[in-house]
Image (cartoon, rainbow, N blue to C red; front, side):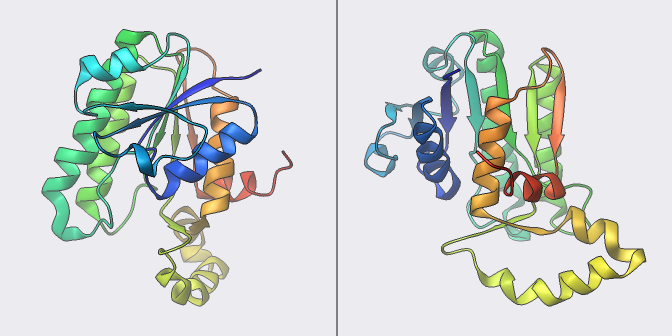
Length: 221
């Protein structure tokens, strides 16, 4: 059954790929972008320019009974950006959760981060707090938790693949290596499509971790 999916961060690395994938499956995509960002949205999407931190503007753009995918975050996160994680990642997620609850959104899909993790503590903390805000809002939600998404312009971690393989082979490090493993843009896109099309029961939350993201990438359409 076709969905109406509103995507925040629709002009980004993942947002454009997801917009195209959802449109290809017959879903209506509404790209929520910052003023002046319309040209970077994927073709075929309905575009709404707005302030993504404005709860009223977001609520007006959301669809009653629809689906929201929240993708906004600090670009190229690193430990020096702790203040941005609080302002951008957590702030936008709180605004989105409040707006979605007020608007009667049926399902919120949030791209979080793999956790717990021994590094990037401020980033993980902001994303965990965002998940908590979504739960507190009473929303039906799916939390997709990648660690790093490989794709165009995001390929440097390929050099770490031999270390990941070794860590996954050693029993003492296997679980953490799998939880904090690398996923591809195609796997993430497919995982988000599946998440949007298959919400959890009303009022419940579902977590999609790295192994599940990888598995989703191998599922037939």
